[in-house]
Amino acid sequence: PRKLFSGIQPTGDVHLGNYLGAVKQWVDLQDNEHLILSVVDLHALTLPQDPKELSENILKMTATLLACGIDISKSILFQQSQVYQHTELAWNLSCICTMARLSHLPQFKEKSAALKDVPLGLYIYPVLQAADILLYKATHVPVGDDQLQHLELSQDLARMFNRRYGTTFPLPHALVSGEGTAKIKSLRNPLKKMSKSDPDAKNRICLTDTPDEIVKKIRKSVTDFTSKITFEPEERPGVSNLVMIHSSLSGKTTEDIVKEVEGLDTLQYKSLVADCIIAFTSPISQRIKELMEDPDYLRNILAVGTEKATEIAAGTMEEVKSKLGIRLLS
Ligand code: TYM
Image 1 (tube, helix red, strand yellow):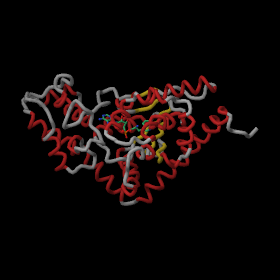
Image 2 (tube, protein in one colour):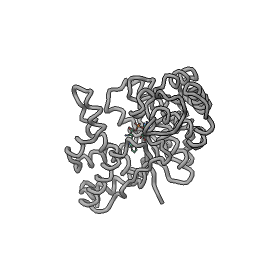
Image 3 (cartoon, protein in one colour):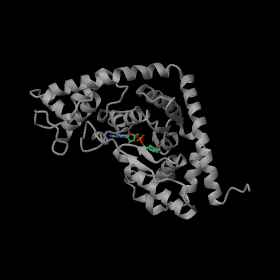
Image 4 (cartoon, protein in one colour):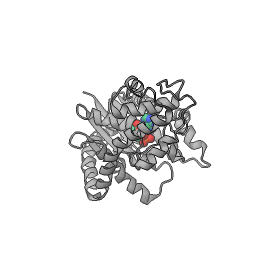
């Protein structure tokens, strides 16, 4: 059977890119698969965070995943830093990973370019990600397009460990949503991905945005000078991104949508897309608010997850330590 692991950083509100590229897949997969999900707070620490905000965000991410339909009777949901084996395995893997292998990764290049002093943690970020995955011997990792390079590194490290110390880890494969939602584009620049870290909040729509904000962001989204609505991601990335979002939230195909809205101009279509997004996000946003009123409940959910995750992680670490020669019990 397949074993699925994925993670999300508690660094801000979940946007439609995160939702369509990752969270929706998780919700759909959890019925028939063994799914482990982590709120990866240690990854968030690779860039400066306000401590109070970070701890709020960990609970908010938990609330958001529950509001989106993650069901802890089916999946394991936990806070990464509470399962100490993540840092432990990350160290072990950092001793087999070469510096050259990390320096070429595009996310490191992007994020470090803006910094005067580059934290070591940012550099070894993908090694911690590999540890997350390998700790549970995951075979598949449901993620958006931007994580593929990190997944390749996880595979490489699994291969290197297995070769040096004997077969231990299955090679983890990326599971990217097939319907073209693996890369939802920025509303301000449809050649870039929608992203949490973009300083311009108008690039993204968050599940918690108010209807008013959603209408404004969609109205201001960058399209082109053709008013007809078509789905041509290469030629017309802006309008096609709206059709893609509309299609995946409504469950209709892009062809059906294009047919349905024939005759509408871009402005009219934008208002239709905004309505569709609002109808989708309003109940989720409401549910997040309700859940946030009961932090004890959320903490308890995470505690249950910590316990389940630790059980698996501790088993793997016993095996890893014996293989490395640092476990001295008979
Ligand atoms: P993070 O927190 O940046 O994003 C969470 C998930 O959302 C996906 N995503 C998108 N998908 C489609 N279109 C977009 N515009 C878009 N933006 C983000 C991401 O691909 C991701 O699946 N390094 C990871 C977290 C992580 C992890 C792991 C993932 C840590 N350990 C182990 C998998 C397995 C990250 O920063 O995701």
